[in-house]
Length: 213
Image 1 (spheres, one colour):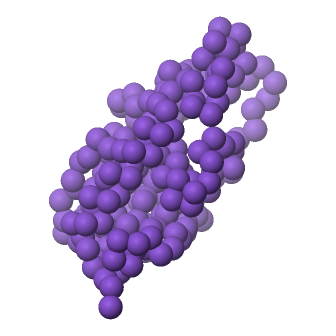
Image 2 (cartoon, one colour):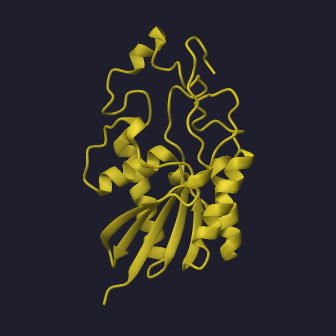
C-alpha cells in the first residue's frame, strides 16, 4: 500500500495596500487586519490535520499568513525563496493603469512568456522543486507551503497539463485559499481547492472613470 502525502499550497491573506499598487516582491507590504483574521481561520481549518512542516515565501505577507498555522502545530516556519512571488517589471505601478500607459506597451509583446516578468516555465521549475522537496521530506503526512497567487496557479496549471498562458482574472486562487496536491507515493493522485476564509473575502471595488486608486 502506497503512502499518501498532501502538499497544501496556501495563498497569503489580504494585504494592506491603501494606494492600490502592484506590490510584487516589494518589501513592507503586510497583512491587513482582515488578512490576519483570514490567516487565523485557515489555521483553525487545518487544526487536527497531520501537518508536520510549514514553509513560506520570504515576503512579509506570506510569513504573517504562515505564523498562525505554524503556531497551531508548534512548528518553525521554514523560509524558502522558491515560494516567492513572480518577478514583475510593473512593481510599484497602480493596478488599474499598467496596461493603459503607452510607455508600457514595449513590455507586453509576449503574454505567453510573459515578456513583463519572470517566465512561466521558470516559475514552474522552482515551484515544482519545492513541492517535490517538501513532499519527500513529509512523506506520509501533510505539509503547508505559503506562497502567492501566480506561483500557485502556475504550478497547478502545469500539474494539470494545461497551457501556462492564461487570463489572470480566471485564476482559481483566492486570498487565503488552499490548493492541495495529494500524492500516492510519488504519483500525483488529485488536486483539491478550498477557501477556509472565503467568508472574509471582500468583493473588488469598482473604480470610477479617471480614478486611479
